[in-house]
Length: 179
Length: 181
Image (cartoon, rainbow over all chains, first blue to last red; front, side, top):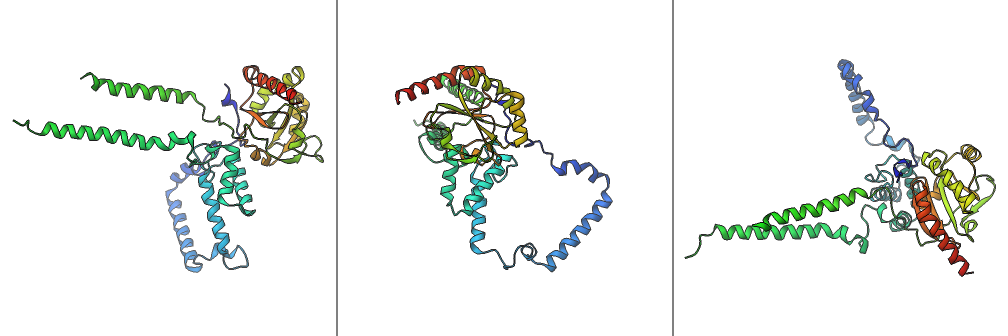
């Protein structure tokens, strides 16, 4: 089985060095300039906060003064859906977190469907029909997932019963034998 | 007194077996919910003749393989010779989905390595791939004469998979198609 040869749709995934990692050594080399830079940055940030309380990102956006209520609601639904959907390539990341090419494509698909007026359920259904339950972080309760959903409760019950029995035995042993 | 040692040992043994079995499973191989369903609809240009728009009906009528590949994908290179053999020696109908590729690179690939495909659907932005639940390349669907997905193999085809899984299924589907007229 040479599945490990299988290359995923996005070449560099996982190998991309974090920019901070490559910068780190230089930062340590010049603590003085680092402090100066930090002070300037702090001053700039302070000025921003005083001069433009929250208005700056919006000003660049549109003639309308604020994003409409519906646009904001759609954005919240979009972000929520991305957290519910798993990236098929980096399986322990959600679509919101993953850098893989496929995750980007699937994000675009979610966006397109939202823009076309699809409901959250329709979008999750679309993904499940194509990629299977695995694409969802909270798969539906059905025969194939009974073990998945039931195991934690089962384990808790078994361990609880064992603990209860042990405590009762200990209590019984602690009692002085009745005459 | 024995039971005291027996139970922890039994639990350990059961866990060891369970986890050992788990280690042998490959989490990157996912079952496709499309098996048993018609190959989802699509519309995309042909690779060789971009002015021609293909859709799922172009793949109906014959038992066939639908192979997802890209010239950027080394594992696709590994299975290419097998696809050539299937097409040339076994007469298998193979349709291609050229997935997230660049047209010149794909055409060069076919010119250099041979072209086992009846035609290729050019899926430059990967949207046909999403419709089909593709999450990498190569992937190979087996479809029957009515265009229903009957199996999906994820990863490069090799001689064993072809001999034990693909060819027997194709033969069975051919029988089925012949019976249904």
